[in-house]
Amino acid sequence: MRIEDVVFTNVGGLKTACITRKELVELMAQRVTDFRDPSSDYFEKPMTIYSTNGHSISIANSDRGMRNILNQADILHADGQSVVFFSKHFSKHQIPERSATTDTIHDFPKMVHGTYKHYLLGATETVIKKASNKMGEQYSNFAVSGYRDGYFDETQVTEVIKEINQSGADVLWVGLGKPKEQEFIHHYKSSLKVPVIISCGGCYNFITGDYSRAPEWMQKYGLEWLHRAATQPRKLLWRYLTTNPHSIYCAAKHHYFSKG
Image (cartoon, rainbow, N blue to C red; front, side, top):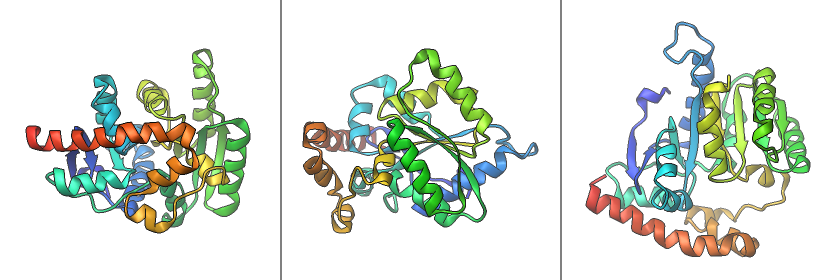
């Protein structure tokens, strides 16, 4: 699958891709091939991939700069089940399924043929090292070409970019938290010599087991946010209580007043 084949729809003011989990992986793998082919239209052009959920929609409708950054991604995929629901009721096209980044990092080695090199950026030194080791051990075709924690400042950015470029990675996973990871990708994508750059939030903590996924039935019915709020109330409860209602309002607003 190529990006030209993707149908996009407006969900809460964000240009969101109507793709399945498998199609997201196919897009990533195809860009790796195209990136290294001088005859391709996408030779040495990184594909930027961000995720969207209720929190993203709320932020995008409160911060015009962030909305512009999110809408400039090559692919904005439905990380939250709420986005799939909104597309069904408030958009021109329906998104077929949720593609959570916490699943995508496992979907990629499961669904592709051959070995790909990955660079993992973000989290603490302990977590990122453990996550890198676990992914390499779990999947023989997930080659970790490098990793670095997310605790660096502006004076170290040049060094970080050099490290990533020298690693020869096919996919760069950026888990710095929203909106820092999207801002990092947006500002430095032209300097990064990586075929695919994807934001991944707190997925490293899920890989290590520091965060737990909600039961399948809660994920299916869009209640993973409730599980996360219950397990991390001090960090997430207030966020969900404020951004969830706001995201519903924004999705409806853009549908009825913008006809998106």
